[in-house]
Length: 223
Length: 338
Image (cartoon, rainbow over all chains, first blue to last red; front, side, top):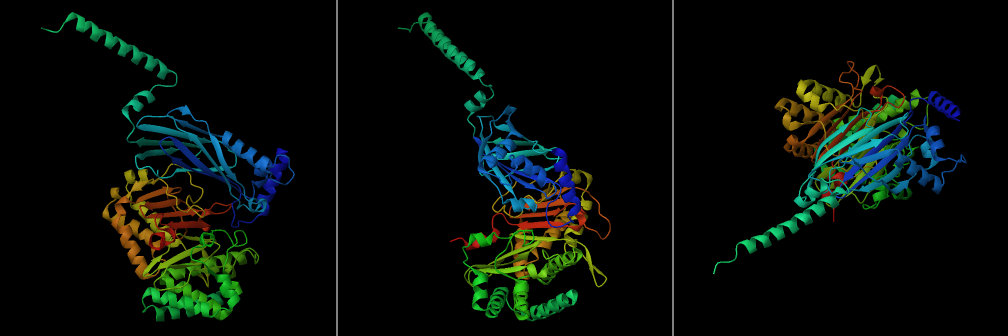
């Protein structure tokens, strides 16, 4: 199967002059949008003419020449599985929000864009945060792009964006103002440690109360 | 034959342009639009005119050939010689002399591509469309569009204001010869940017040159209303000469439109030059007389310019897409919002 697809791709590549459409790459352009408690992104996937057979085989899994609703959703899910997002080193669970497919003819011509939107809730974090995005979908034929939209929330400030040469790895560092200090304190505690911290705080409060009571006994009010 | 026809039309339009240039811009453009409409029959007028609030038509533009992404309105190929002249007179009335020349060269490049591809019906000057949204007026907002493969002019008029964003230019081949003369429709965009890069010192270059590959436009067709985080070298870290060079690069897009609108736009961009960024990705040299093979982006509070060579199986210096936007005022929304 793979050999047939590769042969088809090579045939199309050699048979197609250097025309107006995308040819031998699968453009995967992601735009990331950051809010305080949420990250959302849109991936626009444009298969070139020469790699269309490879991409189509991944979408039209029953090879009936039609991309059904089920296949559309399943492919969007597979794309999502090839992506990863972490915030401050903690993995985020990606939610598939929407998907849009062009006509097959458009994809065949190298001009069809598949658009997939996904998002994830962000746990509370500190004033400085680091979001990492990885895209490994169809890495043999992909041309990756990833950018961050200017945040709508003016209290969020992008500090740095770093990528590897292929843009399959992307790191976004940003600052958020107005995060309550209590949140900053608790956010630095991973997962179940928060409960340990809460218990410790309660014990400390109880100890302080007892100490105060003891002090009142030792030093009775003067008459 | 083709070149004679093109040259004839250009001469005719340039002659009318010179005669009309004495007029203030808005009355001149409105008059040219009405003169063009007067050459059309009722059916043609219905095809070309859209409501000003027709947002589907407003965004119906692309870098791709019209056979791949159909446009609406009337194509140049559907017009008689007189209608064609009137259509081009409308386009030229809204543009500077250099802007109209650039448009003409982009269209000629597509005609060249058609011939190079064995008379491929997907390309050629007949496949450029013109459309009008709203009613041409000296007071009320309206717009007209002219475009096809590698060209999308979206010109919004609002009284004395003329807004050119979003506009897409491109060329394939990006270098060709006419009567022995080499033409590079987007040659200045390439040369001026490379000169700016070469004028930067090593520290500045380190900031300006991105360490990753950019395969295409980030804010091309279909990406209206989006603003990405700027990257590269901020012009506040440039010296006066470098900032002047940066403005000169930008002028290749801002000066497509007629002189008074271009002057106003340049004044706006000059005022915020220190908040403008320059980023480069790709080879830092080019063969003399050839285009760069690198992507670059200029981004400020009211401007995004992208220059993106297209690999597409061939030589990236021969196939270029560019995008010119004002994310805060694409389609002149600032002046036309109710």
